[in-house]
Amino acid sequence: MKIEVWSDYVCPFCYIGKRRLEDALNQFPHRDQVEVEFKSFELDPNSPEYSGQNIHAVLAKKYGMSIDQAKQANQGVGQQAATVGLTFNFEEMKPTNTFDAHRLAKLAKAKGKEPLVSEKLLQSYFTEGKNIGDLETLIAIAEDAGIEREEVLRVLNDKNAFANEVRLDESLAQQYGVRGVPYFVLNSKYAISGAQPLETFKDALQKVWEEESPKPMFQDLSTAEDVSCVDGSCGIPDKK
Image 1 (cartoon, rainbow, N blue to C red):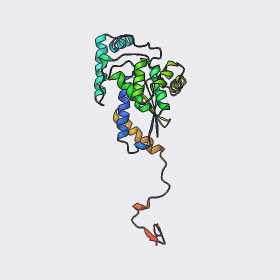
Image 2: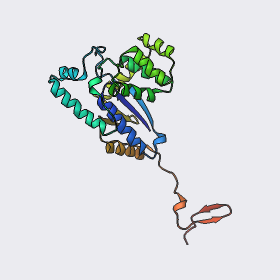
Image 3: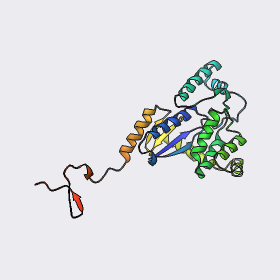
C-alpha cells in the first residue's frame, strides 16, 4: 500500500495529521507493507521570508480578526496538538516562506532521509521556534539528518535545484483538486482530507487493505477438520 501525503511545514494540522496517521500505522498489522511518501504543498507560495511578525499577527491579518481572537484560535489548535503528544510554541513561531524547506526535503528524499528531515522541519517550526526559511537553520536540520553541509549549501543556493520536483507535487495536487492540507491519498484512489480522528485513518487503512490485497486462490487446508495424508501428500478425502 502506498500513502501520499501533501503537506506544508507551517501547517499545524499537517503535523497533527501526520501524528494521527503514524499512530494508525503503528496499530496496523500490515505496517511493514505500507510506503509513506511526502508531497510538497505551499499554503502561500507568495509568503515572504520571516519579517519579525509573530503568528498571531499574521493570522489576524489573514483572516481579518483581532489579535485576541487569533490567540484563542491558536490555543485551540495547540490543545489538539497536545492530544497526539505535540507541543506547539505559538509565541516563538516564525512564519516564513517554505519553498526552500520543500527543496531540502526533496534533497533528503534523494538521500533516503526524507521522513527524518520532514519531522525535523515540523518540529523546528512548531516546537523549537526556529526560522525554517533561514539558510543556516536548514543546513543544521540537514546535518542532523546526516546530509553533508557542502551539498546542502550547493542545493539551497541554486534556486533551480529540486524546484521542478516541488512544482510537480503541487501540479499533481491541483489535478486531484486539493484545496487544503494535509491531504492523504491511499493507493492513488482513496483520499482523506484534513487531520481526521485516529479511527478514520485506521478504518481507511483496513478498507484499502481488504479491497486492494489479492484474495487467496486456494482453501487453507489447515482449518479442515477431515484431512487425509497418503504417499507424501495431504488433502480432503473424497466423500463417500
